[in-house]
Amino acid sequence: MNLIPVQLYYEEFGKGFPVVFLHGFPFDHTIWEPLVPLISDQARLILPDLRGLGRSPVPDGVYSMRLLAEDVLNLLNTLKIEKAILVGHSMGGYAGLAFAQAYPHRLAGLGLVSTQAGADAPERRQARYQLAEEVGRKGVKVVAESMAPKLTQNPEQVKSLHKLIMQNKAKGIIACLKGMAERPDALGWLSAISIPAVVVSGDADNFVPLERAQTMTQLLGKAWLVKLPGVGHMPMIDAPQVTADALNQLIQMVISG
Image 1: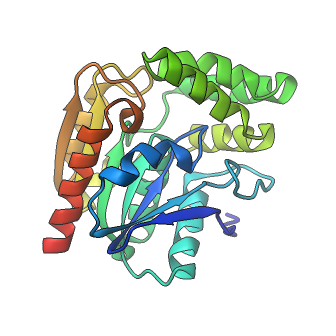
Image 2: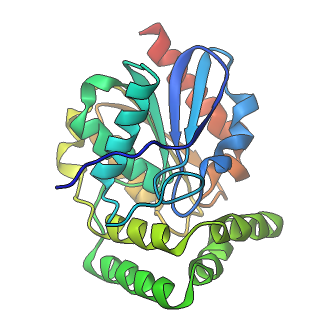
């Protein structure tokens, strides 16, 4: 397996215990901006763009979740951070779980937002490959047009998310789709995660059903679930205060030991 990391673009806010926010597919670090003023001053917030998306490099190949985890490790090493809290949204959650399995000693806490631990069902995997093929033929607009309306019930946010998706390159989108399709199942080893973890899930999420968040919470050793009524796949945008409160609770738990 070729696990050569890239130098991720990132932005930093605040001071204190380091918290790395991993955005979902097919976005960039800016989805987390509504949370920045709401997270306590005790935290140092690090917001990278994952490889292939935003302002980070777009190398060739398939972006496996383990490869995304290697990029995160490289970022921590570059910033001389020994231990951090990882918060992952959707695909960022898959990368966070891959990191938790490979480098548990570098992890102090885990936030899992609108994500899941199970691998894709065969039909879902096939749908990702088909979408990747379509992006190769027609461009990023096929993802923007199919995904944006399902992400949130707020029409203005649908517009801004469509625009955000369109800013990415087709090569990065395709590589992420294939990486998500090939990700392994994480359900079997979740109980080995002994650090504090919070699972945030909207009950109107069109991409990750609430039941999967409930299953993940039950399997994790020290986890609790924050259920958001009427919220879809983007809690950080549609319910920023409640999402920030959950993450602040996690941060305080880690700091107080």
